[in-house]
Length: 384
Image 1 (cartoon, one colour):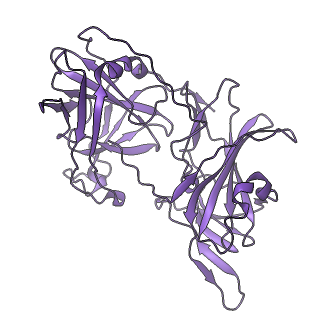
Image 2 (cartoon, rainbow, N blue to C red; image 1 turned 60 degrees about the vertical axis):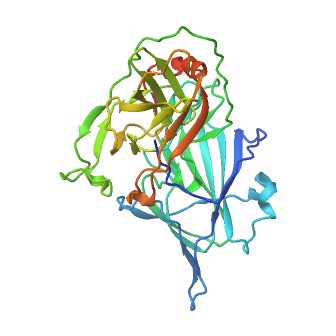
Image 3 (spheres, rainbow, N blue to C red; image 1 turned 45 degrees about the vertical axis):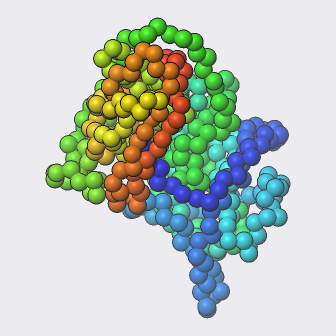
């Protein structure tokens, strides 16, 4: 299972279509995530206020600059009238609004920052992780540049408290057929695997034969035995975790979508994940079981190509959609539904997270078998 390490208060998505004007085609916009204001310090002599932005956990990147000539959005209240009178200087929260447009043959994501102080430091916008992914085809539109140029750098801004900055990220133009994209790699705006114009696609299904052929997935390749320290595996020290690459790639699917193959000798369950980072950690517990109505347990035997009971890293592209194949004891051919159980694992200290359990009730065998086609291997397509 993949563990999310982001936490924020709540999300105003309320995506709105905008009118086309001034050679700018407005696609969609959102008030975005609502985050706490950082602590404000005031210089007693100059009366100038300053704030250090919330940490983005990019301490290994040492480049820090001052951003100059940042555009100030004068029409912010017109763009987001629903929030203009709600969040004032006295409110302890800030909206991390955004807006997607097409301008001069490029796709532009405008990320708005309402200055909580005259000087704000420790900001982060985008890096090589940043991309848009077509939700239907999986085509990746990688970042071209930012304006101002803050690519892969922590940065500070000097301005005026209350001004709304317009920080821009440029991508290749989307195809006219692109209706939904997933945004990766913009953590300060909480756009890490978030979909724009999400729509649920319900797969049709029908009763299948009793058994399937054994599925053949692309096998991950071990890249390094340890991330950076040649020591025995220690879940409390991620530098000892294995690093894999070449995961089984698929078309975009909702996180943790599953498919099932039933054979006389084993049950195969594929699970889909978004890869939100170039190097992301995963883990599968040996205690996972399938449970039928009579209480009989079908145990997890292995996860193909990766360790069982160890946390590990998978390297790829932010914006990849990948799948792992779990192998369980065989289900009887007359079983219609089952429960999937992941016990709660032992806590570990990496990034302050833990290994929480889950219970998925009444999973329908035939519906999951109908999802098999969703997990066909789909090579990565990149547009520079």
